Length: 336
Ligand code: SAM
Ligand code: SF4
Ligand code: SF4
Image 1: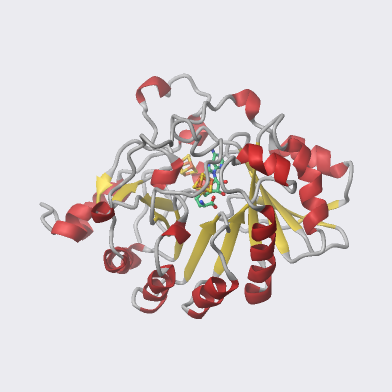
Image 2: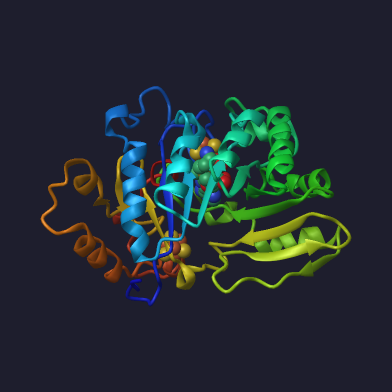
């Protein structure tokens, strides 16, 4: 177990298995920027499943307990269940989870992922109505299909988490319809504050619909009871009285959780980042593809994590943080 400069232990790795996606959400991969001229990673640049499993095995003695497979859209990688199986059985990772837009999540895929050891599914859905859904993601959005995927995940896993990014003036009117839609299902609906990730979404603070605003809105329609949050939780949780639905708030703008941040991120081509907002890649593929590193991997990783002092969200509004020089990497590349 190692700790970084702010005494945070490494426990959690989010892996982007591909930077490609079949959606173009306006807050993540705006279609004008991620168009036909955008250069995605080539197939031969991607870490293979064997290499990802090797990374997981190597990081386990450092404290790695949880892995989230994400992207881009992770289900665009073929036979993802093979990776899940390897991470669970060969690397013996306690929890392997996935975040997906749900568009490729057939019932057969869900069962196969579960049979290979997947522990949980988080699905992203930003609106109850197809009309607003089409504004949040103008390409391939199909709410009927995704609603079916949600029901299928619940039938196989008994539960699901749903991520909803809320953008002021665009989909905040969908908060109550989303609650109405899922009221009696075994779901944790997570309201995520719109973040300034990457350089392409033209983020403005004025576009953030804060968790406080969301709670105030929900309180007008439903009675909420606060649940106890686990110590390392990055969200605050509530339940809607007399209903199966729980809700959570991920408030990285209004209430950052950097002091609890135990996660690293691995891009699809094997670059490790110590923060979602970091622009400093550490090339793991050097070790796992060519194995020509000057240091042993153990020394290399110890150095990376023990020098980690990232707390971007905590410092976001402090002028000392020179954002003009950052060139932040995109969410689809670094892994959401
Ligand atoms: N394609 C998959 C999906 O959408 O679930 C996985 C990758 S996506 C980058 C992971 C999560 O990041 C999604 O829940 C998405 O809503 C969230 N996300 C992307 N850009 C964001 C932003 N600018 N602010 C907040 N959340 C964002
Ligand atoms: Fe694709 Fe997920 Fe980004 Fe939407 S949030 S564009 S589904 S990677
Ligand atoms: Fe972790 Fe960086 Fe997000 Fe802070 S800003 S919670 S350090 S990923």
